[in-house]
Amino acid sequence: MEEKGQPINGPMLQEKQVCYKKEFNVPEDECLSGVGWIAPFCKAYNLREFQWHGEAGSVDPQAVEAEQKQVQAILMTFAAHNHWNFDETSLFPLYV
Image 1 (cartoon, rainbow, N blue to C red):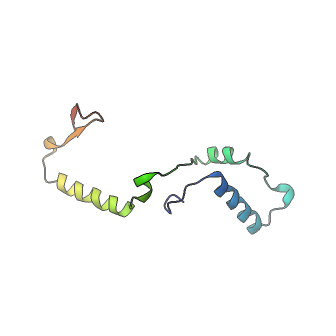
Image 2: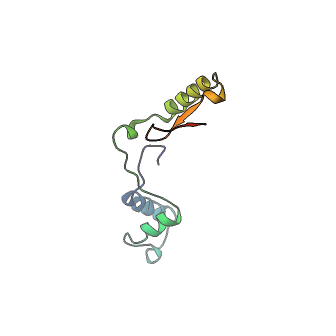
Image 3: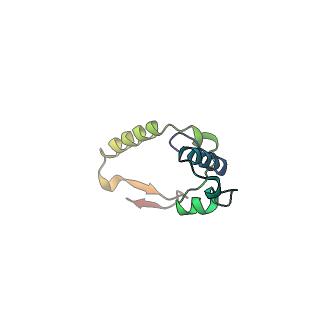
């Protein structure tokens, strides 16, 4: 779902449950009712709900991958001792 840009959330999981219940002909007395099953299900399968905001929701993954390859090609033209990495504060340069 993340590849489609759709967040995984409780209502989406409930809708999927209804679809699978119909598809597999699960008897009513064996169905999970309510929303109490969602949290354990998400924990068991390591699912988390993310809310995409602003630019994060509009990023094209192929464009990011192409840009990463371009940057790697540029960095390959420099010797390893000329590669620098800065931490979040940009105060402490580190050799990579």
